[in-house]
Image (cartoon, rainbow, N blue to C red; front, side, top):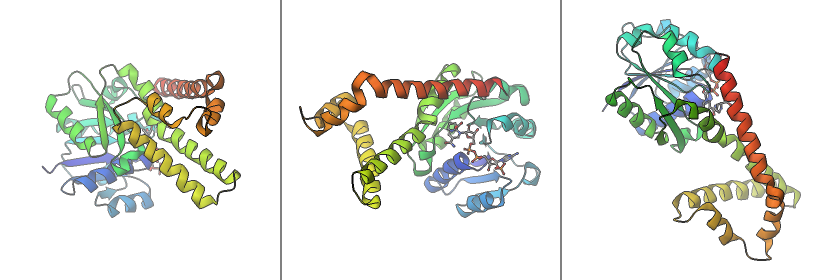
Length: 271
Ligand SMILES: NC(=O)C1=CN([C@@H]2O[C@H](COP(=O)(O)OP(=O)(O)OC[C@H]3O[C@@H](n4cnc5c(N)ncnc54)[C@H](OP(=O)(O)O)[C@@H]3O)[C@@H](O)[C@H]2O)C=CC1
Ligand SMILES: O=C(O)[C@@H]1CCC=N1
């Protein structure tokens, strides 16, 4: 069924979602507000109707869902200009790290329908992890619509405790960057061991892709999959001795995730 959406902010995350939506459902009408010329052109290129500011949107526009994908410090300012959409029944979905639904509600008329989402950039190819939290007064119909729209971007999961959103941000929101960093490091290691750069990059990327898909599809857990690669006294054991001695990797990843979680909490406090 065709729906009318409004996306405010079409940078890295907004565009990743936009591309996913329009690729899956070209019948959607998506209005975009984005000040940067090049990013508006990019949005128009995938079929959106893009304008530089809210005031340029068609008079009387009735978006069913307003997605807000600006930097966290701008969310409240943007929402303050969206009262008319709330009055016309829109559901508001912010993807901003740290910005609570209470802070959003503060800028919208009473009773506004508000959902918070933590997406990630693999949404651009339909492989995102889209985690949602809805305030108690959001209707089932609105939740179903938001979830079905975001399902075009990847997997959808609901949480019922908003406080968990900071941890979600640390794991799946920021997580792709950790994996990209690992790919960079694995590529560099391959080059250092004498592989051509192109070959090293291909091996690193395909290995992460294949391992991720196997972890998702296998009926055993990742620890079992790891053991299946690790011949006693073999090459993998030699490498894992480096990764696992003194729980090095677990400690590093836990420390990194805590730093992201703490930053998400800070972002929430500064808004
Ligand atoms: N990038 C990611 O992987 C993820 C990001 N997020 C969240 O998504 C949000 C956006 O992040 P990201 O896409 O990376 O940031 P970007 O800076 O790439 O995108 C934000 C866009 O919003 C535009 N913008 C600024 N002011 C307005 C306004 N008043 N109206 C409309 N658009 C405006 C910016 O334009 P200009 O630059 O010209 O100011 C920019 O193009 C953040 O809140 C972040 O926490 C969540 C999960 C993952
Ligand atoms: O780095 C950030 O703050 C955003 C939120 C999650 C991923 N990117």
